[in-house]
Image 1 (tube, one colour):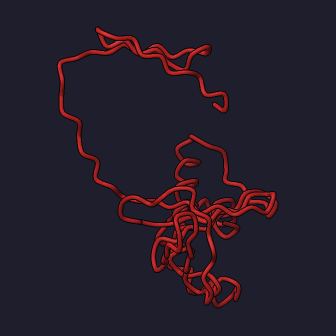
Image 2 (cartoon, one colour):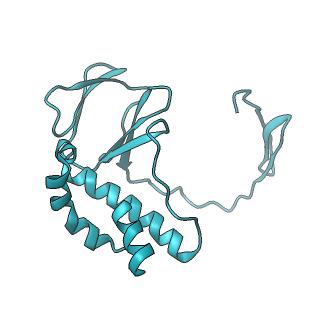
Amino acid sequence: MEISKKEFEEQGIKWNYYGYKKKLPRLKEEYSFLKQANSQSLQESVKNLDRVYKSFFKGEAGFPKFKKKKSKQTVHIPQHFEIERVSKKRGLLKIPKLKTKIPIKMHRGIEGQIRSISITKTPNERYYLNVLTRKEIQPLKPTNKIAGIDVGIKEFSIIYDGDKTYRIENPKYL
């Protein structure tokens, strides 16, 4: 990001995703710690930066800021990972460039084809695994019925379908 900021301020050169993607091998030689990450994760970081720069140049957002080490940190892993289920609530995660598998807690099953994963570290040192999946959703059969939904505070919602009234209580945690 520092290179792109300098080029923009000094020469007026706007961000170019493919140009910076080509610079990754040279940057890996210059900064040895980049070799610890797989190339796909680095490319995902450049894609995220590309999205932020496009928003800036469209006037939709301010100039991108460096992420602070103490803020939330996320790494995206688009391929070459494995999630092995050990039990109903436990599993093992194998990611590239890491020799050992990471034990994970699973609060629900994974439905559909896994596309990519993201590992997020929160400021209080907790880690979360987000799994992006693709699942075919069967469309509902069309009906000629109409329903009215009233969303409120006292009750979460009241649904009237022309015949019956259904009341859904307000879950306190929401």
